[in-house]
Image 1 (spheres, helix red, strand yellow):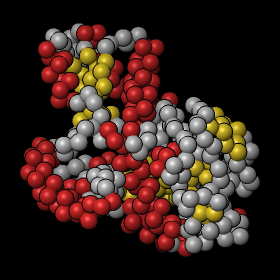
Image 2 (image 1 turned 90 degrees about the vertical axis):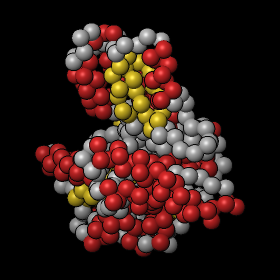
Image 3 (image 1 turned 180 degrees about the vertical axis):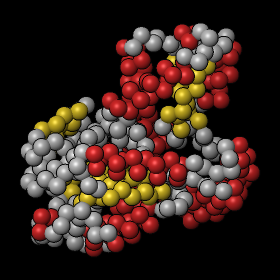
Length: 380
């Protein structure tokens, strides 16, 4: 059984994901005592408890509501009393679901990086948008109207494609996300190898090539024996990490191979020291370009989600995003950078209310208030 919190990956052949065998690690509001070959204890400061999730060979969970991966959000959706404002959520899977010890075969560790994906050419824009809006985690329709999911996705993607093409044309004719993600995968492999940790790294995109399903097929071919899943979204949301994890859930339920594979999921990692310091480094670097750096407003712009995701579905995204910005600003303050800052949300779609304040409206308000210098910091 594993319990992996957001953070350090120890993929050594000793079989421990966090520290040494039997060691206890803590971060935020979670404490995990972890040993893959033994038992796991988890304590969370949540309005609920994390319980081991046992998978049968058919992929069904024993002693649960049938969930393969029980995040705080998914618990909320199944009427379990839990509310997460912490990034660290322990995810547990039973290692011996088939009654065969993982040490009986050669251990092969795999790390699956999950990302959004993006159109590589202008001709890819409309079908990419269709895939995006056809996802029920992006546009959540009432059960009675779910038959309209694909027709609505077709309509929205066709309507938005021309404007989106203009944006992609302005950055070279396509999204650089696949190239960047591949570079991250290669860098991760090198970094792990420098620590004498051998792991195969896979990339799975949600809405464009290489799709998550393609990565899963390759993982099977490579006969991976343990899998770490790392969504490349610092904060957890139903519509990002949650959607990709849902794809994995469906695969585990239907595939005998994955029903018995030990899988550990890192749900979010925005609070990790390396991430916070890297963001602070980038901001300091850009502030130095201004004539009067101390007068610059730091403007964080995050991708929005419909307000109902947070209020009705228990999505922790807003809380985690606000925590993320607070941590970055605390780090900057510790370095003597005391600039004012604000957070706004962009990319809303349709007539429903999304997370506020909206980026376009806040920009106008800042101008009206006399803000002369602005450093825009995209954050997700």
